[in-house]
Image 1 (spheres, rainbow, N blue to C red):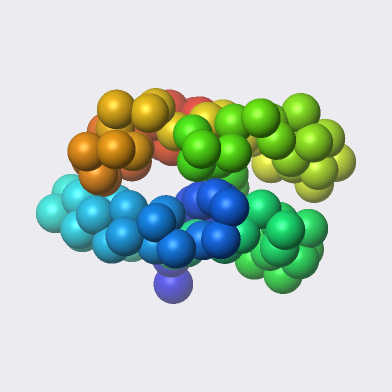
Image 2 (cartoon, rainbow, N blue to C red; image 1 turned 180 degrees about the vertical axis):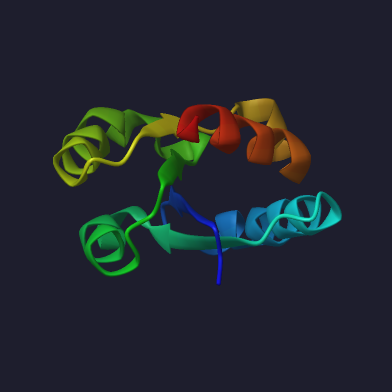
Length: 105
């Protein structure tokens, strides 16, 4: 059973899906059992209700939706932030994992 759930959201969930595998590899290498998944910003409500993530990371290409998504995550009691653009562009799963863990506390 996964100890933490990390949700990534972007426009369609496609490019973020590639980053999910990089984050999963980094977590596995550190011996961590996390449920990490990607979804589209249009499906955030559904994913928050069904998957109950511990953190939501928003893709930098949809940073303009931060306030809208933050209202949803605040209502669900889920912390959120935007993925660092360099880490996203270079698919640095280890850095994104560290960011998620810092936010989760």
